[in-house]
Length: 439
Ligand code: ATP
Ligand code: MG
Ligand code: MG
Ligand code: MG
Image 1: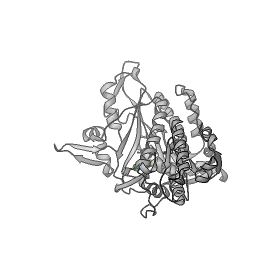
Image 2: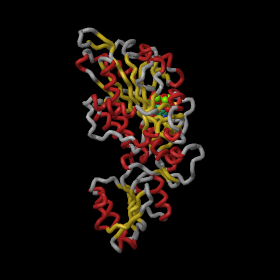
Image 3: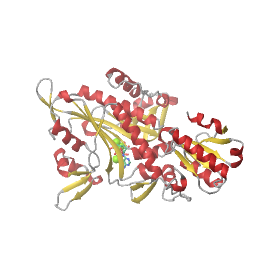
Image 4: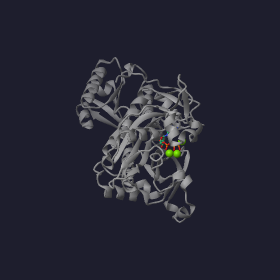
């Protein structure tokens, strides 16, 4: 993409309304625009990152055996009356009446709807396990929408729902998602720690929030230092091997880790001081086994091996891709701007032409631009006729992992400069060797 042809509305001033760094940087880098309280448009740079994240989420869900569907944003209130949640959900739910005076709502989550899909088609335990997910916008009328897309009212969520014949097999589905989440967050360049979370009135052990440690996080969290260096399962993990999954989950749930609501002072105080990490955290994902909470009232039953009907055991698994972007920036930035982890960067490379109009410089940049694209890289080419300082500031702000800087003098000598955004390290590279660097 040529910057002269792109839409990248960089802000020079730091927006006053933004309280945390990720919100400031997303506004300044022209990623998002607030349309009304807690509701955002995604501008081209933001949309690219959102798509990258969704693809990682999707790949890892698919790898774990979940199947993608797409449910609507608008739901009928009747489904929620069946589960009893229409009255319970309260003011976070946006309720809508259509022209026929029928009650609708903008979905804050999809347990009811997916349970309805399930009960309409699935009859036998032989069709299980099943895990259906979608990546869809949600609306929650948060009391205090703030921090940009970190806590917005309209936000993107990947929500998966698993169906199993009994508790034991539901636990395997839970483990699958647990492992998929570890991999998803790692691929986004984040260290997410699974922490025991409140299961509410349903009880049980099976709920974990995936938390990113960050000083601007809204929750207080407590965990063992061991989590900071624990190895995340590789791509080779076998999602069909229940034992392997259970081992990984055991490893990742053994040291102490809890959010404030689940914090156990006695267990915590028993830990040596230098092994404790008490910090603030951002919830980026939440997995939950709730058994027959919805299947019972909504009559989603399957015939078991014994020929008897039994309500299906369910779990739900959420990730907020839009919040995740803010969390990544909270975890990865410096005073000059964003530092994208490689897997989620909006472009792979930023190419800076220091002197557009200079025939040699233009020719060298055009060739680099074409070669890199042919090599499969996504390149943002700064071909604008602006000051060097402004070019550098923009590239640093938008945080592409690698910058290639081509100036007239270097090009004459057959070389360009490469700058690594994360380390600031610069090196001069002969033009003839440039492509090899990206092989
Ligand atoms: P929070 O505690 O921050 O209000 P939640 O527990 O209500 O979040 P869940 O119902 O568990 O959220 O939803 C699953 C995921 O959706 C969360 O882990 C988070 O990543 C994302 N999410 C929830 N609410 C918002 C929001 N208002 N803005 C952006 N993302 C959100
Ligand atoms: Mg909430
Ligand atoms: Mg929460
Ligand atoms: Mg939650």
